[in-house]
Length: 444
Image (cartoon, one colour):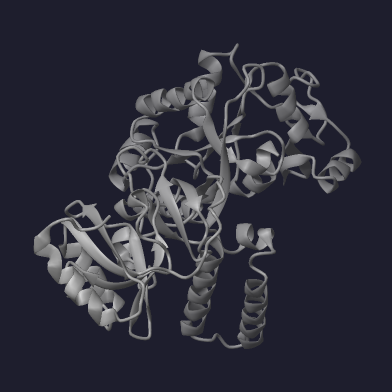
């Protein structure tokens, strides 16, 4: 696009100074306060375009390319400037921008049609706090649990993404840290935090051993998926899944004691017995007179129970008064096969086993309200907890969220049992009408 106006003759006069270089002049319209959608890097004195961001004015124009050297913008000489000065200069500019460029010599193959990858973020990200982001204005902030649509992984360190739901009102993609880059940063942060901790007597050898192990694992971060899942959570690939009418997802309620998850589960089963059911547990204790095998419990020998533990058939199990009790994957599957929704209240340790099964659980965290509200709710039930007991419940909830929040699909703060029940019912009903994001590994 050549400047047409005669008043722009200075362009041609200035171009003479570039001697034999092939230069091009392009014009792009830039809206006020919206980034142009390109990042630059310094190569000696030169300022080179290093990235074109999807959805921005730079990409839509098709006139700027990676590898182009910027000589001037609106008559201001760019060669010799630091990239940060260039960013600031561009941030102030709007309207018609006229660029004088030396075109890139790289002949890039036509871009392959990239497939969009959908991921769930397992950490919070704020580009304004990130010294490494190539351009803060182009950084995309997100929170733990957000779904991101990754539209470009050309640069392994800085992916281009949209937040789920933002595509229509956010035409310009944002930059987010790439998976292995983020893993390395988190590992480094953990190592630094460990270094800061005062050494405890007798623990020195342990600390050194652990540190060595961490560094070794970090080296294989890309190859080792378990490492990502276990040690450093960054992103998890997700897909949309619509539950079939005849195979309802089990609903798992998780929370500290006294947060109301057991009451919510019983209320659902009592109010809609034809829709909800519990998994029949296994036990090694003897059957009592009023109990029916297969309805109240599956009564098995200790030998059978222990063999089933060894072969990973239990979601969770424990011992009480020298008898074993547990919930098996098969007993949950029996409820699903009957067409009902299986309701479970589990300990957080069971979540990993459940998620690695083929049951596709929907996990809801029942969180406590404020300390004062929690005290009032428990007082209604005739309980009078001490302040430290209330603090323990809230602290336990925080710990659960911190260590297992990546497994949760939703959270309900139980400030009022009736409202919590209605919200729980709304979420369960939504599974019938709307597809939900689930780990892609479940659908492979």
